[in-house]
Length: 231
Image 1 (cartoon, rainbow, N blue to C red):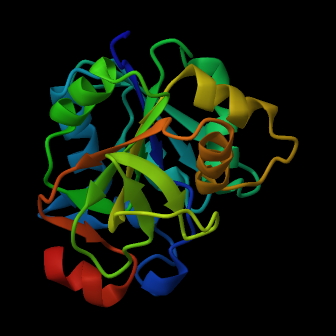
Image 2: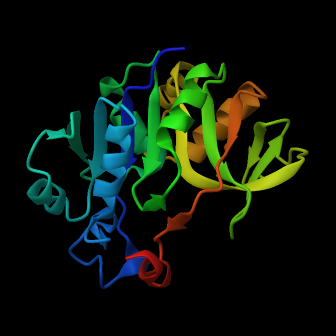
Image 3: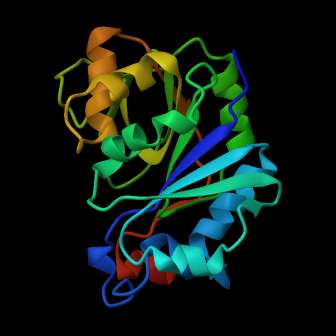
């Protein structure tokens, strides 16, 4: 399989549960260890060999432009794509498909995730995997709603009622290539979730979404309480 070259970081959320911290700051721009969370993400992606990093923006988008004034970050090209209206995760991905090589695919990374796992190891796994999509999962977590059977994702949020061997926590990080990206491209609506597209792929081709397990420290900074733990 082709090498993953592009990463898409989701940076357009409103961060409503983190107000007042996010009143004039995008959630991924909140400081963690003295620098924006998203800068940690960029550093990990660049170190893993990604050549292009794309970020969607919406709320307080000027904060990204002010901080990241260069079109490069540690050797990777950096592109910010503004959404006038929020498109959700799937619509955001659909909006930047022109910048993705469908054969090599893309890594999709929630911009409010602080994960200490090895991005390159996950990318290497996907590059050798025949599946058109792979999800990075955890065995523990407060929201274990990804159903897994024989190392394949068979359901998400129990939407399909599929039989499973275990349930796992989605890290908010996944990789995908042509077959999945074509589903995203062909969806008629502008605003939809990547979970909807993944479920469509699972229904169309059972066993086509690989389950990758990594139990490295992981935090979703969705609330002030969670953010306080890592800032």
